[in-house]
Length: 252
Image (cartoon, rainbow, N blue to C red):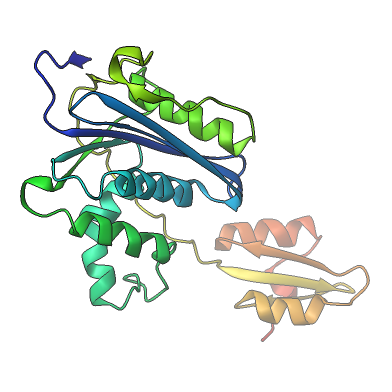
């Protein structure tokens, strides 16, 4: 951790979101520290939500608190979704009419539009600098926001502080050492099945896709079916049914 040894000239923000189940009851929390030494904590609940939605809501509510201030904002969050979305992905989404690269509607786009508006309004020296704060490593601001968000997600009472930094029990200016965003997890390609096998009354058919296999076994008493991911697995399935490749017929 590093402590500020000189008066802090930025607006300092920490935020976090939580969800009891994903989706499920959600909560968000944020802490805003102003340069003159005032602290504001905010939080809220949504009955049905997601982690990402609550992370966005926390960021939005924090920036709404300071939208009339012209100091630069130092914004810490453990949400790579929020940081990458507002600094990288949002430009492509807008060019494509709020569609993803795959042509799907952008999730949480109403929240993204509000967040983009709030961030874009902060021009020049008032801009937002986004910082990644790894969660659950003891960073006081992050831990406090997590406590607020989790409490709201579980509908537990929690006192929200508003007042002087001198009376604030959280060491909000103990900031994490700068670190890059973690690498994105690559989406694994869905493996295509080698074949689908159906066994109705001992007559075994190979199908190229599940729809053909389903049509044959649906409503058939005692019907069996299996997906084979390779030729070898296909043989194993046939053997388990007391059959061999010579017993196999081609289906639709």
